[in-house]
Amino acid sequence: MTQSVGVVIPTRGRRPDQLRSATRAALGQDHSGAVEVVVVVDGVDPVLVTDQMADLLAGRALTERRGEVVSRSVRVVANRLCPGLPGARNTGIAALGTDLVAFCDDDDQWLPGKVAAQVAALEAVPGAEFSSTAIEVEYGSRRVVRLAGTELITRAHLVRSRMVMVHSSTFLFRRGAFWADESAPGGQNEDWDLALRAAARHPIVHVDRPLVRVRWGDSLYATRWADRIAGLEWMLARHPDLAVDPRGAARVYGQLAFHHAALGRRREAGRWAWRAFAARHGEPRAPIALAVAAGLVSAQAVLSTLHHRGHGI
Image (cartoon, rainbow, N blue to C red; front, side, top):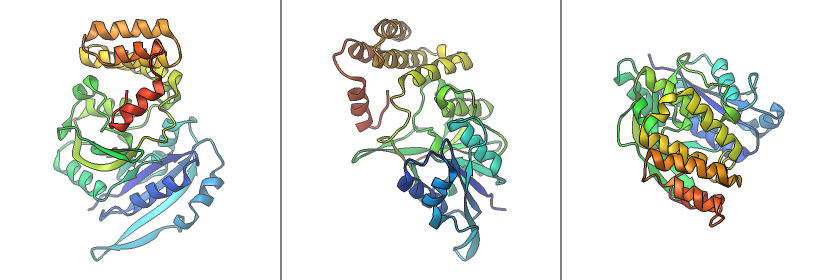
C-alpha cells in the first residue's frame, strides 16, 4: 500500500507569498498516496495565517493522478508546545496521522518528484527511517546546486561536515521515529541535531538530486549571532564527538570565532580562532573571523559573498 505523507510547515506569517508557494509545491507532488500539509503558526494569531491561506483551505480535496484519486489537504494549527521552530515542528508531527513526516520551511520550495524519489529510496533500503535530498540554494538571482556525492550519509559524515544539503526542508522520515529537540537555544541547529541522531540509528538515505529550492535571502536565523553561538555550544555539549574529528572541530570553532567577531567580541573571537588553527591549520574560517574582529570586513559582507556562492560560514 502506498504510504501517506504529512508535511509540517512552520510559519510566523511574515512571508505569505512564499508560504503559499511552499504549500502548493507540497500539494502538487506526484505521489500516489495521500499528502496532508499542516501549517503550524508560531508566535502570532493563527487567524492571520488562515486568512493568508484562505483559498488553499478547502478541506480535504481529492485529486486525480494517473487515473487514481488521491487525497490532498491543508490545515492551519497553532504551536501548542515550546515557542520556536522545534516546538512548531513537534506540534505538526503530533497533529499528523500519516505514515511518513516531512519538513519544509515556509520560504523554501519542493521541486517536482521530491516525495516520490524519497519514498522509493526509503523502500529500497531495509531498515531505513530517514531521507534527505540535494538542494538548490537560491540567493538573489543566483541558484547553486549542492550535492552530497553519496547516497548514504552516516553520522561520521555529519560530524566531519555539517553537509548543508542535509537541510531540514529535505527531511522525510517515519512518523514516530524522531522529534525535534525543543531545548535547542533559539531553535539553532535543531535540524543538525536531528540528522545526527537519525544517522546514529541508520545511515540517512540520500537522493543526490536537487529536489528542494532553499532560499537564503530572507533567513530569520543567519545573523542572530548570540543564538548561533549558544546553538553551537549546545551542540558541542550534546554531541561530544564533534570535537574529536579535527576537520569537524575546526569548522565549529571557526564558526564560533566568526560569530563572536560579528558581535565585536575580539578576545573571544581570537580564542576560538586559535582553537580552530590548533585543530586544523588550514581551517579557513579562523582568518576570516580575525579579519572581521579587526574591522577589515563586516560579517554581513562575508555572509553575502558566501551565500552568492551557495555556501554559509
